[in-house]
Image (cartoon, rainbow, N blue to C red):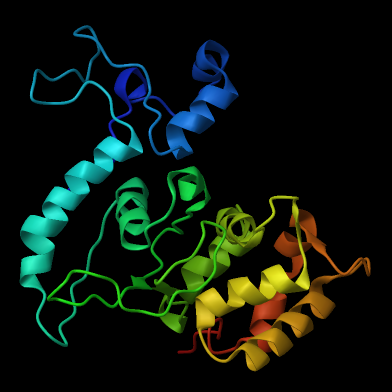
Length: 249
């Protein structure tokens, strides 16, 4: 399967390396990591990870997507049969490239695609056309036909993320923050929950209202990231036990 994006001269460095930040600046680093067409500086022959052509010297997500779609069209689609299931396991950038293609995400919205680690996402594909046929749900990136599966099997890992580094919670918060103002209102929570759960709008709207009421400790009718990170897990356990149920045994 296709590998992760080639980071050129930055290959082998940590994304939080102070020397890299000082040399290139946070804005450039963020663009190279999140934007569709931006690529880091190419590596030269002195780089310890240099490989001669046809190996690339650097890549953007767009370049990575081309590799992904070559594999998708040559290997994955021909293997699809009616009512069959195909499991893809890949790096987050590889999946971002595929998701942006399957959901037909506009280039300017690609930075809003967030892929939480090790959480399955289901797409229904027409094996004859290769098109996604799941219902479209509004997201920060402009709409998705994928459905994330939060279950008891991945509950312990999710709980660790939410209760520890908060990376999953932050990713969910940023994905739901449709207007990018750093706060979630009831409508944004409703749209985010619909993307996770599906279901009818009335039930999802009621659940969104309950979660907002439970987490909104300052009574502002919106949630900032701190409120969301502190109270999201408890609210999910209370109102969505099927998604965040405790493991037994």
